[in-house]
Length: 328
Image 1 (cartoon, rainbow, N blue to C red):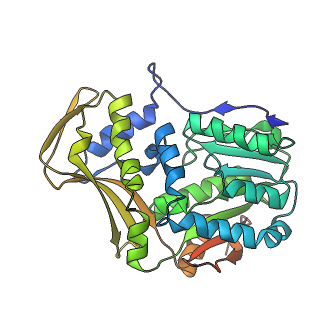
Image 2: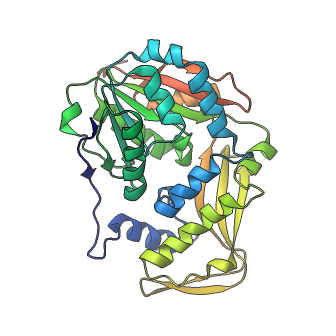
């Protein structure tokens, strides 16, 4: 069957640049604490760098999640059942997604990702591996409302949100996303989500600041992307990568740190940064079991099973769409 139909739900300007990317960059660079949403890491270069990150010795989440998917394949198959349309929030990991698809015999596969080139490449690779599976890639920002392919309307749905990507969002944004996908996937839907656990700080910080410098390159590529797509003059060599644990918010933060006083342009607009000032580029929140359950329930999902017997600690949680009720 292979790739049946590709959908694109991205608003681009005449030069092909995502309008939301441009708006987020200017808004973020205008704040007192400069910040740009982590979803903009994932152009073709950033997506490829992240695939490299997942194989690093310091980056445990992928290894832990793969171990869970492998070890509990039979239990996942029994709990999920065959024939569901798998809607993955992300473009499809070369290691994790095939393990899930092998285990559950899905009726269709719908990867949703904002990085169009990476999305198409990963969809083609999965189609080659699963030639009888209908694949419908959707180029879209999955943090915003997404129209799913009409061909899967009659199928029960499984949302698949691996990699602890939910941790990139502050709680209110995570709950908004979960509520949106509760509505989009419909009654009877299931959600399989990866959640990273709180653990020893050194392990966490090394996972986001590896000795080979791949995570640093991934972070700095955000600035390179701004220069490429928005006529930026950001002196990338004058920025350093920083990853640090924020205990108050239970999250790893990534920042781009100005190594000296800087002046640069983006789209013809001037910006300045003082030495030591940062652009906050990513959060990765970590959750205890009760925290994760509360987050899912607030987003319209009821946890029904969890697997977390790995070291370093990581959890796969299966949740079902909570029945809509008018009273407690």
